[in-house]
Amino acid sequence: MASRLVVEGVEAGYGAVRVLHGVSMEVREGETVALLGTNGNGKSTLIKCIMGIVTPQAGAIYLEVDGARIDLVRKPTEAIVSLGIALVPEGRRLFPKLTVEENLLLGAFRREARAAIDANLAFCFECFPVLLGRRRQLAGSMSGGEQQMLALARALMSSPRMLLVDEPSVGLAPILVSRVIAKIKELKEQRHLTVLMAEQNFNQATKIADRGYIIVHGKIEFEGRSAQELRENELVKKYYLGV
Ligand SMILES: Nc1ncnc2c1ncn2[C@@H]1O[C@H](COP(=O)(O)OP(=O)(O)OP(=O)(O)O)[C@@H](O)[C@H]1O
Ligand SMILES: [Mg+2]
Image (cartoon, rainbow, N blue to C red; front, side, top):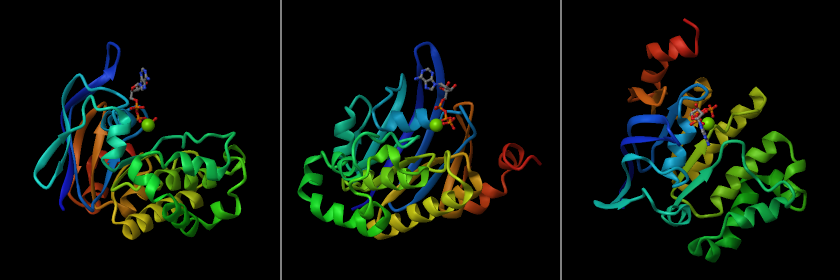
């Protein structure tokens, strides 16, 4: 089964403020695609449009599964999760007063996921042994790196085919950033996931990305067909490397 996520000419924003201007991009099955951009350029807004949290004013967002088109715009977020798309939100968004295990169980509300709850929980604990030892600990008392691992694990509890990861590196020490990024790659391979990752840490993101896009002021300014092309791009040099 072949699928791809397509974003076409999306315009979106908040109230009168337009943030995304004609954004088009796609993520094909099995790829890891990086959405690179510095603060405030619209990465999270685009991810929220895909998840049905922000409704675009124009354009299309759809999944193509075996040639059939499933439109996502105006679908409720639960329906989008049910199609196999899971979000690891910026800033983790855990329930700090709930335990690690309770947070994980909340990730499994979709019907298909409920059937697989035991297997998914076992998989999460196997992948993230730190969570097993802390399953009864309150999420809010975990370190930043542990919380990011928990946020990733929670997303896996919905048995997704596609993972949208919004700035996993934010607020983490460099050593933890490397670990989280390596974990995303490992999970992707083990679970045959497709990954769209928004990042401003371009060095880390291009370590695992197959290709990617650079978003500047709500417009896709560059599409790199490989990690190499992204690294060599002038925009990257200008915005990230200070060249
Ligand atoms: N709920 C909101 N209401 C009004 N404006 C918003 C809202 N959320 C985001 N914005 C604005 O939209 C623009 C894009 O924000 P967005 O969060 O998409 O950027 P980003 O690329 O994810 O940035 P960061 O790297 O800081 O997370 C910013 O100017 C921001 O102030
Ligand atoms: Mg953001």
